[in-house]
Image 1 (cartoon, helix red, strand yellow):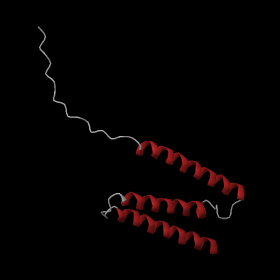
Image 2 (cartoon, helix red, strand yellow):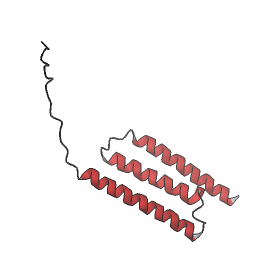
Image 3 (cartoon, one colour):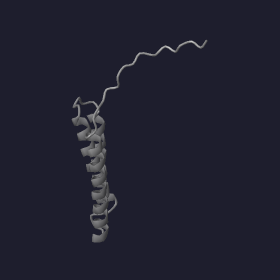
Image 4 (tube, helix red, strand yellow):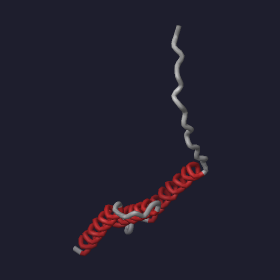
Amino acid sequence: MKQYRLLIVVWIALLLLLAATAASALLQLGVWNSVLNLSIAALKAGLVMLFFMRLRSSHVLIRLTVITAMATLAILFALSSTDYFTRERYVAPYQRPQQIAPVR
């Protein structure tokens, strides 16, 4: 019964984090809104992995596999973001519509 109580508490925490995510859409934080939402999403994913996927009480090799997968994902995100942040941003020049010469 104690384990079910813990899972219910975690489920309520996930619902509260869901409400925080929905409420953050109403806040005018600019760029920090994305940072806040990604932080809340990471916290929710961590709770799901630790409690509902039972990684907290699983074998060491399984935990090492999950950590390796998360590290690989972080490396892929980092490499993708370096490509995005190092691009030059060009404003598309305005061009007038060109008149097509009539065919004679």
